[in-house]
Length: 152
Image (cartoon, rainbow, N blue to C red; front, top):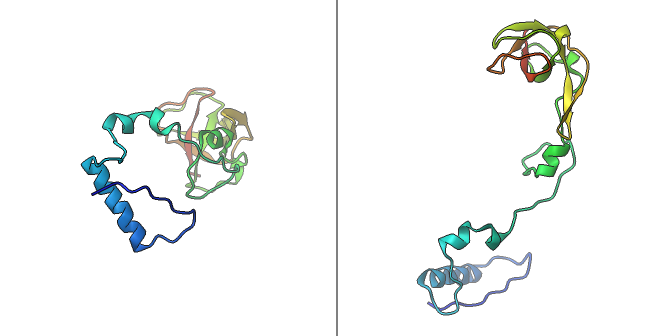
């Protein structure tokens, strides 16, 4: 099987003839046919072969199945600042503004602070109402940010 240089225009229909040509080229590459590019495991593992993957940074608030770039994550505003309206059973990140809370222990919302991460920095919001349980898996000390669930 010989290697054939192929050129398809963007948006062209992928016909069975084109699929056959591509299949033949993969077979030629696997067989090491003359003119076929040689692919080694080292070349596949090297970032210099493919470069650093990049992507479009989506707008803050995008909520779908698109992949997120690191720039999107850094700019994202995690957690609603208005935690007072969260219903019983809902979970959120809160900042401990009181004494140490053991894992599984409860604390009054007045001893916590809602907030959000903006550009990697926590911005304090208001204290939530109700009673909250530490579900972070560890004790939460003063000024620590952890996951709490509203229980009352």
